[in-house]
Image (cartoon, rainbow, N blue to C red):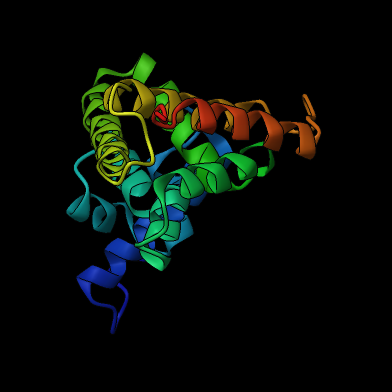
Length: 198
């Protein structure tokens, strides 16, 4: 099980990232061995190490490649849509997101608390996500959808906390009524709107 005939290095890397995302999400960082990922991808350990120097590097690379991007996908599909509408739509989905890609981010965050090799890349990754969200907030402020007095960094942090928390507190552990949740989100977003004068 070495290099697969007819498969390019880029295809091998993609297979490894997909396998890593699946195995890490299912077994967690500590419960996953490099050999498990190589086997799931159908390659040798040597092939894996020719693409990734460590299990920690592979974890963060898998998260970058296969982590959830709901807000980014919605924005790409409708770039002119107000940021507040995008935030509301994603927020309504939060109680209903038990897919493996959401768990991958949680596993990476847990691993970062225990493993310094994971902590540095995860700090970079979360910083990039927070910066991207803060940029969306600034765009919403420029469009007049969000109050310019709101801190883009603080709102980005709040959104990240909600997203990570919703992955852990699933509907089977603590259900919430969809209508009540939507009403709460509407109130929160209205509170973030600029004050209207006159």
